[in-house]
Every structure is written in structure tokens, then in C-alpha cells.
Image (cartoon, rainbow, N blue to C red; front, side, top):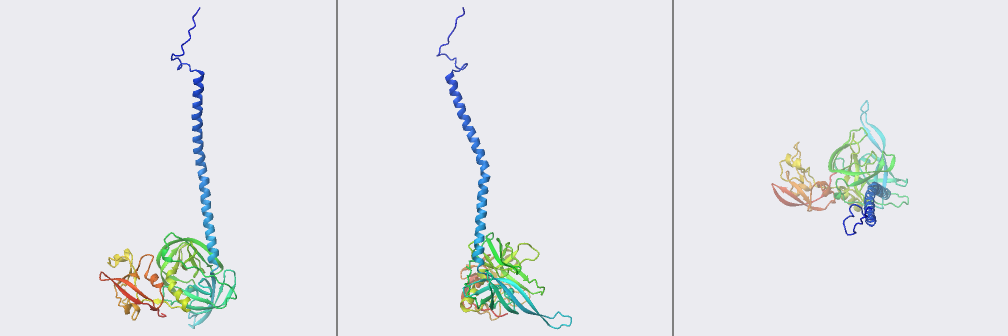
Amino acid sequence: MAESIKPNSSESAAPHMPSPRNMWAARIVFLLLLCLGIGFVGGRVGSESAAPTQSSKVQKQIISNESDLIANIAKEVGASVVSVNVSGTTTSTNSFFGIPQTQQQESAGTGFILNADGVIVTNRHVVPVGTDKVSVTLSDGTELTNVSVIGRTSESDSLDVAYLKINDKKGKTLTPVTLGDSSKMRVGDKVIAIGNALGQFQNTVTEGIISGFGRSVTAGDSSGAGSSETLQNLFQTDAAINEGNSGGPLVNINGEVIGINTAIAGGAQNIGFAIPINDAKGTINTVLSKGKLERPFLGVHYVSLTDDYAYTYNLTTKRGAYIAPSADGSASIVVGSPAAKAGLKEKDIITAVDGTKIDETHSLTSLLGQHGVGDSVTLTIIRDGKEQKIKVTLEAAPSQ
């Protein structure tokens, strides 16, 4: 008879055959670890799959908010934007016999209201010399025909503006725009253009950004008459500016007018130009206070310095308005002008006006444009390498 041997419980036989109690404990630990692992992986996969959905929601919300913002600005500022309808006569001598011929022409542009009395600013080329009749159409479709031209800058002036006055409002309450500070605009800042596109579509709204500033362009009309004008210190924007938008407002995201739409680049897409509103503030204030247009005048021909121009003229000063000698021998300082009376000379570099430095966002034209006729300004200049200050009293610009 074989003997049955019972192992002592104190001996180490467990590694070979675990007890039921130990087996259940191991199973429980394994299941816990397995559940934790599955939970971690599931949570990670779930979060990754949910991320695009959350991001999409955020993007949609941003787009929705931006659309609402633009729509609100278009509604608020659009109430101050008018279509400008013009008829006038032009005289030409292009007939076969060389006899002057008079033709009636009609055109349309845009303007915006500056005060509740009905003063409107637009471009000079919207209401050129020879204009016989002007009417404006409000945003609600009301046409007002009793409109007069207060004044326009001269054809040789780089500031292309004109002012109109509604003499009979037909009981309408006019809403003026809010003017902003164009010197605070940066490349990349969002802007909105509002205007009478193609002279047909009232209060068309386009959006874009400020693409550049300090641009100088030679602009001509599309009439084929060959007329052109040189414009300086312009904003460049990719907000679509079409024919008929001229004179309309360029607006920042706060609903403030920071520019006057004025020109487009032919043969290019979405390259438009606008006059910074600060350049026109001097004339705006004069028109609103005196009821007439007076353009402050210094009387110098200058070059806005950049690194390249400073190198070309061998100058150590790289920013400012350089009164460069004229290539054709004409005077760089107008005889009898405020500049001549104050003692400014050729090769002077004007670096500041009343302490504000001239740079990419503050041109001499812009800084002087904020003043009115009769104002005294202090110019900081560099002459023969030394800085000095000269006080100048601005006068009204000559008609030509």
C-alpha cells in the first residue's frame, strides 16, 4: 500500500500549484490593470477624435462672430454713406475741323456724411471742374437733388478731396460717420470698404487688410481723356475697390473711418488705394467750422526718406522729409511760401512736426494735413548735420 504524503502548509509548494485564494487575487489584479489600460486608451482615442470636432466648433464660432461684426459695421456706417450722382459738360477739340465741342457727361461715385447738417466728403475727381449738377442718394434710397459743391482741392494737389453740402434734406435725419486715427493702422489690420460699385450697386461692402502704407501713385480716370493726378502717402489695401467706390469710406473694425477710397491699380486684382483720413482732417475741420475749403500750405517739394533714398542721397538721416534739389533746376521751396518766409533751405531734412517724428506711418503731408490755415507748427530739421527747430505759420494753398 502506497503511502500518501501530505505536504506541510509551511513548505514552499505554492509556486508549483497556487492555492485557490491566491489565484483569485491574481485574477482581480489583472482585471483591474486591464480595465485601467482600456480606459486610458479609450480616453486618449476619444479625446483625439473629439479634438477636430471641438476645433471645428471654435472655428465656426470665430467665423460667425467675424461675419456678425462686419454685418454690424456695414449697417451702422452704411447709413452715413451716399451715392454721388454727377452731370457736367466737357469741352474737347478733337473734331475733324478742330472746332471745340461740348459734351454732356454723367458719372457716379461715393461720399460719406460728416455732420448732421449735410456736409459730405468725396474725391475731387468724383466732382471735377465742369460739374453742373450734383445729387446724392441716401442709404434708404432717398434722392436729394439740392446739393452744392463747397470746394475741391486743386488738380496739382496730392490730396484728392472735395466737399459737398445738402441744402434740402427733405426732413431726413442724417447720421455722420465717426472718424478714426489712421496713424494707428498697421499692415495686416482688417478694414472694410463701402461704396457705390460701378456707379450702380449702392453700398457694396468688401473686406480685406491694410497691405501697405506710404504709397505714391499716378492715377488716371477711365474716360480716355488722358487726365491724371499724382497721389501720395496712400494706404494700399486688398479690400476690393471698384469704379464708383471712389470717395467712399475705408473703415476699421471699430467702425471708424480711417481712409477715403480713391484709386485702383489697373491690370491687377485687389490692389486699391485710400487716402489716410488724418491727411484730410485739417480740411475737414476747416469746412465744418468755416463752411469753406482751405488747404494748409507749407511750400516745399520733398522726398520721403527710406533706407534706399538715404543711400542714394548719401544721408546719415534715414527718416524724414528731404528737401532735395530739383533735377530740372526748379525751386524746391516755393517763392513767397511759408517755408521760404521761415527760412527753410534746400537739403534741409524735416524730421518732426510739433514733436511727432516723420516715419512710415507719419508723413509730412499727413502731419501738416491735421492742421488748419493760420496754425503755427514747429518743425524739427537737420541742417549740415545739426538739429534745430523752426516755427512756421501755415497759409492757404494757392488755387494752382
